[in-house]
Amino acid sequence: MKSPSIRRSLLVRCCVGVGLLLSALSLTIYLMVRQSLYREIDQSITQTAALLANQVELENDKIIFEWQEGLGTNNALILDGLFQFWDDTRGKTTRSPALQSLDLPKFQGENGHPLIQNIHLPDGKRGRAIGLRVLPFSLPEEIEKMKSLHRTVDPKSLPHTLVVAGNLEPLQRTLDQLRYVLLSGTLLTLALGFTLIDHVVRITLRPIDDLSRQVRERTEHQLDSALELPGALPTELDGLASNFDSLLARVAAIRQRERDFIRHAAHELRTPIASLHATTELALSKTRDAPEYAAYLTSCRKTAEELGTLVKRLSALARIGSPAASPVKREIINASELILELLPPFQAIAENRGITLTVEPWDSALQILGDRALCRIVLNNLLDNAACYAPEHSSIRIRCKTKGKHAKITISNPAAKLTSPPERLFEPLFRSEDTESESAGHLGIGLSLSLDAANAMGGILNARMTPDGWIEFALELPAA
Image (cartoon, rainbow, N blue to C red; front, top):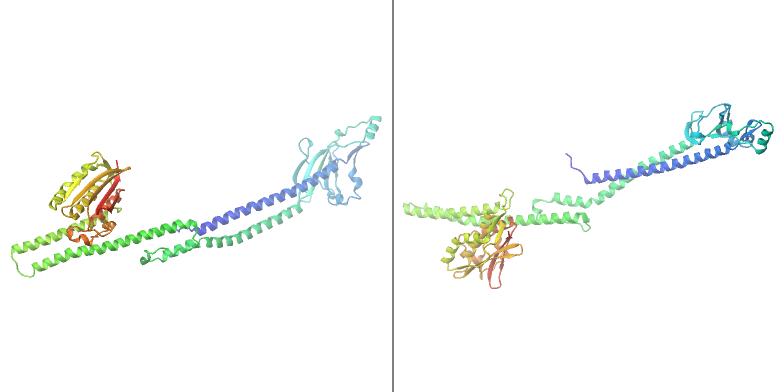
């Protein structure tokens, strides 16, 4: 399926909108002109009908049409007038000279009221006509004369039908020309508008094209660099560009973290592998008895166990937060019970090094919301680091307190020799030069693993140096 185009969509919709607007405007102009022209011809035939209706006179028992007396002077009436009278009582008809012997359609409105409608003229052309009932009038002296002769005739008993018509052909030719002009103007305007709209759309979408080109041309080695944004970037694209730059920044950070991870992992793996290789080479360098081989194999087994531990930690670090990882469980955990459950093995380590481990009292009913397995990973690593890195004959302090809607567990110990920034302790495989001699068996992965576990639960894990030279690790989780 072909992908939709914003440019094509804008162009089509704008052109359709302009086309509809022009069509509506043209139709409105046409209807207004048509209505005006029809109103003019209706007024003309209505005025003519009113004039002719007042010129039907009853005189000496005869109907006299006064307009016939002016035929010699009224050339327009002779040449162009189209009207006809019908005597509804006697069946006679009187036509205008222009009709000759032809008849107009006979009609009138209800009860003789005027009625205007389109007709076909006798010559087949289109016309407009008004039909109405006309009653003759009589002068007062004529009425007196009829009374004296006892021949009184009521003019109302001699109704006539009058139809006055006008030729619509000139009007239709004018309307045809107007339709042609409006249609041509609409099409021409639409064509010019299409060109103009296409040009405007291309200019408007040029920043999108520039961004698309930059993204398309960006190679794998350019993913770490931000986009080159134009100075006049439209407001609608600011969010897209800034979000994409933020994405590139995250990609750069992830790539840097991967490079550091690979570099440190290679460094950590090289040492036990070199030790394992050297031990086996030394064991095979000459013939030895069984106890000597057993000693070398024991050394190899210890190195293999270190490698296994390293691989497990690396696997755990890679799994946490990945889509394939098991979903994080939300369960209520008693913080006091969890700490006391994890303490025994580290108390033994602390006692062997002469370290005092102090658990400050807190609310034994305090509960936190999190994943029990991930909480164990975080707290085990924090306790292990404190027990192994705290100076001999010093102390470790464990606290737990509420902080708003969160519970905060802190584990702190003296760290006067630590010169690296505390946040670097969470980098994968990072080990400070100041503590390398004290970190036997530590692979520099525990704190990275703990940070990812805390983030996966929606918690916060951070480290800071206190003014008295202690390092304090703090885990914050929602209080249940």
